[in-house]
Length: 278
Image (cartoon, rainbow, N blue to C red; front, side, top):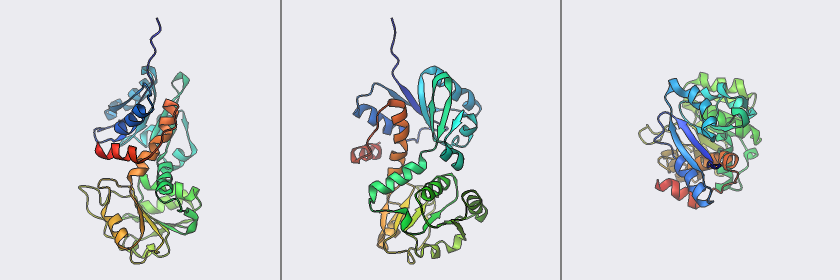
């Protein structure tokens, strides 16, 4: 008798208890009546490589990857998408026949789709962008904005050298701005993005002024706890349109779900509420 194994996927990290991914994917599995499972997998650093290589043999179709492994996993993959290679990290693994590991980074995709869904009239080509921060999340945002045709991209980071590294990677459209001039760099910018953890619960606020910002600019924050961060509140007070960071989390999950469970999921208010309520 042949026993049919249900499709398996999950999220790997350490620690993993904070991840919203099991709730997110679990909502989709239930909604679409898919007899599969999405499992949180806390993996110790010393066990990471052997654990990842064992997952295909255990029936897993793929996994999401969170901290601290998003960069490490690139070296384990047999195939790496161009965007993951450019960003230097991966958040989505798909396992193929023979245990081959395919690595992708869907963070930039999630970022762009969140802006498009929340502000359908948004167009990266309408003017310069200001990106605050130069870490891993910033690399995904910068890469996606350049792919969308932003004419100029300004980066302000507390450590100027890290911003200069992004300029060296992504080219002539990048302008590095001193950290203490970030507020001035908003002048003429049409897309303003906070990629730092400043403003997150338990972190200091990001002290920045929107006085120089264009009245039609859109401000967004990758932080989604709290949902309305101090920077979004300040942007609201200045009359700017704002987009919270939860949608990026939801949209970045969709490509992996489609790959693993062969169903294109919908990102809507019902999903937002399910994740917010968890």
